[in-house]
Image (cartoon, rainbow, N blue to C red; front, side, top):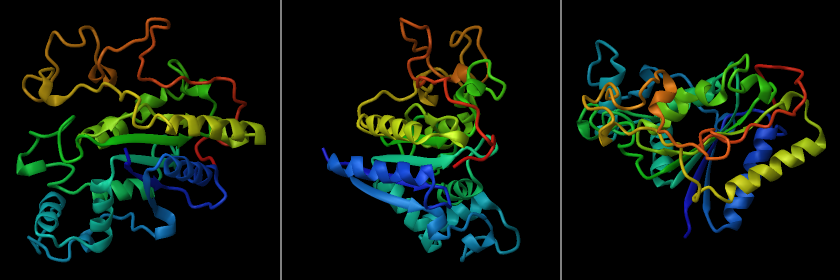
Length: 286
C-alpha cells in the first residue's frame, strides 16, 4: 500500500553522509511505491529561532506567552507560512524520518528549532484543548511512525550500556519519548551509524547497505514499547503504578518489558556494532 514519508534533514554539507543517506532513502522508498516529502532545513533557510515574529496576530500584544500565542495562531489559522507548510507535511505523512548528526549529544539547533516552531499548541500538545489528556501514545500524530537516523562521531563502544558517553537510546530519550511519542507517534528503534569521523569507502558502503535494508522494513518492524499514558500504567496520569516496572526507575522504567530470549537485551533496541575505529572528532561528524 502506498504511503507518504516525510524526511527532515538537518545537515548543511551537500556531500555529507547524512545527505547520502537521504538520497538512498528517497530511492528505496520511491522504489517501493511510496511518496517522499523532503524538508532540507539548511537548504530551505529554515528559521530556527522561535520568537514573537512567529505570531503575526497576537492574542496578547503586551506579554509574549508562547503557549497562548501558539494555540491562538494555530486555532485561528493565522500561523506564518513556513510553520503551516511543515505542519501540513507532518499531518500528510504516514512516517517521519529525522536525519541528523549527533552534535553535543543532541540534535542540531536547526532541527530543534523546527520542532519548537512546528509542534504547535492544539496540535502536538494541548490536543483538542484538553490539557494533558491526549499525550504519550495519544494525540494528533497517533498512528504515524517515526524514526531517528543519526550519524555519530564516536565509536559505538562509548555508547554501550557502560560506555563513557551513556547509551544512545537514553541520550535521545527526550526526542524519541518526549518529542515523538508524546504527540502519539509509534517510534521505531533509532538507526545509528557510529565512528563516522573516520570511515573508509568500504565502511560507508556497508553502512548505506544496512540503511537500505532498514528502510525496507519501515512499515513492518515493531516500535519501541513506550508505556502509554492512558493504558492504566499511570493511574493518576503522572506517575507509574506501584506494580509497574517494580524495582526500576529513571528513563527506561517508561519502556515496556520486552526482551529477546537469546540475549536478554530489549528487543526494541537496535544491535550496536562495536568494531568501528576511533573517530578523528567526537561531538561533530559528517
